[in-house]
Image 1 (spheres, helix red, strand yellow):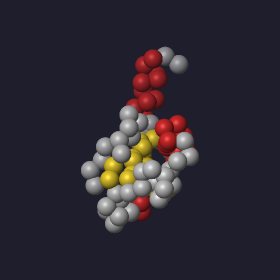
Image 2 (tube, rainbow, N blue to C red):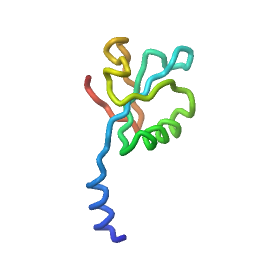
Image 3 (cartoon, one colour):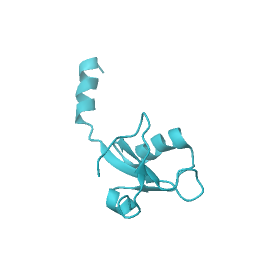
Image 4 (cartoon, rainbow, N blue to C red):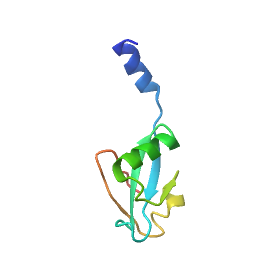
Length: 85
């Protein structure tokens, strides 16, 4: 595949936002992060590469994750996405 074809393929890839939270006692309770990835599975892989298995849940929307309801605070990494809620 040529460089031009690779760039074209990258532009066709749709990225989705996935919210991740931590449970009590995992060191980051009351926090969340957002991973931008093309699929649910690829977002999990990114999260595992950063945090290992020390997180609790993965969600497709901030509302489902309880970001506002529980007043969770963001944790940003070089692989997470800042997102105003």
